[in-house]
Amino acid sequence: MQPIAVVQDAILGTSGSNSLTQLVLSVILEVSGLFRGLGVFDHLFGIRAVRSGEGGSGLRCQSFDRVIVRHVCHHPVYTFYVGKIGLGLEKEIEGESQMLHRRQFLGAGVATATFAYGLPALHGADSTKKYRTALIGSGWFGKNVMFEAIDSGRCEIVALCDVDQNMLKNAQDKVEERTGNRPKGYGDFRDLLDEQKPEIVIVSTPDHWHPLIAIAAAQAGAHVYVEKPVGHTVLEGRAMTRAARAADRKMQVNTHRRASPHNIAARKFIQDGNVGKIGSCRAFVHYSGGAGTPVPDEDPPAYLDWNMYCGPSRLRPYNRLIHPGGFRQFYDFANGQLGDWGIHWMDQILWCMDEQYPSEICSVGGRFIREDSTETPDTQFVQFKFDSFDTVWEHRNYAANHAEKHNVGIYFYGTKGTLHLGWEDGWTFYPQDGGETQHMDPVLHLPDKQNIKELFHNFLESIEGRETLISDIEGGHRSTAMSLLGVLSMKLGRSITWDGEKEICVGDEEATQKLRRTYREPWVYPDV
Image 1 (cartoon, rainbow, N blue to C red):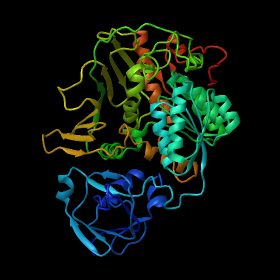
Image 2 (image 1 turned 120 degrees about the vertical axis):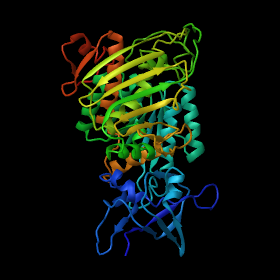
Image 3 (image 1 turned 45 degrees about the vertical axis):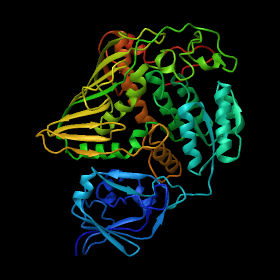
Image 4 (image 1 turned 180 degrees about the horizontal axis):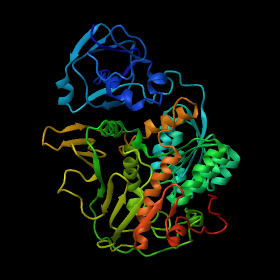
């Protein structure tokens, strides 16, 4: 008898009709290793693998000659991609069999599977429990997270908070359209926490507000889902971590690429040694853009509480390039491209390479093209030194990179070849010997091509004790710190030697002092 994998429960997705999408049968072959420890198979899918003459879970098996699917049902869920498969696979669905050969899967780049990850009412999830949930910061990406909370069926949006009354009303309208209920609106997060006592708080404000709100929410008894970067300065992240631990609350950071199927598969591909020994990485964001034109400061609009918007930062003049949507390019509120896009890619490097922090950071950059009223660099290069490899970050905001195959992502350079881990283009491995490339497409959700659905599901499962946080605040803090140290090195004009355990800049008192900043009264920098 040949090795067999038995899938006891399978959820098959539909694509606009009742026609089945391609079934992912190779989940056991590759994903079992990826999700071991997160409890996905034990708690969600009821999957068991059986070899001839053997019993037990068998989740360490790497290839099977056929896969049997039992108890098939249909649900419009999304697809999940996995990497290499072994031999041929046979699917038996309600008496119908079809052989899927290795070349068919590899010809498409990867196998595709549809299953129940993210469906809360299945496989033991408590469908009767609804968490009182609040969103603080109801702009663009905050609503994306809130919609996933609603769609989970496990969250009731009881309150929203924003200093922009127009954004607040828009978010209230959206919730009412989707649920029939209109959550109460607030202009001050403290009033929301006191009156509503939410069980979950989503924090999606500008960066400089993340720490105080997340800490206050945890101290008020809420589990927190906070946008990246975790803060505006390095030591805020440490204070957030300690607050979450002291309150015994879950705090998930929205580095949703950790829950992205192609990122998970790329990490496993790297850690299985397929790229060889990696000596260097290059992370980059190359976007188009022009010089722009200066925009004068002006009085804030009546619907915006500008004093509360500035909060712990200085009360600077309002400029419409800041709000709505442009705060990342102003140092009072954020840290530019490296503090925004950079944390995603720094997080992926630390995660894929199983590292916690670099030891040396050196950066140069400046504003060579931009002529508008923003402040952050349009060009920056950072070198990060680790014990066994070096990493380079580079960005420019004025010239998309058509000279290379990819505009954003990371190149992992190893002795067996180069792997590019990207966003909309998935991941691609280029063998050193010039052989056939290996590729995996992404699985992303609209709007904005993200994987919040998977990460928010993991957040809920962690609250209920069935999974471990994929993007816990500790990891989010370290990824944020790596990005912000690059910003700090450029500002200082010198290299930084980093003691990641003590979280100090070795032999540089000025740099260590700049790991925090003075808050504007009455706000107080969180205790670290």
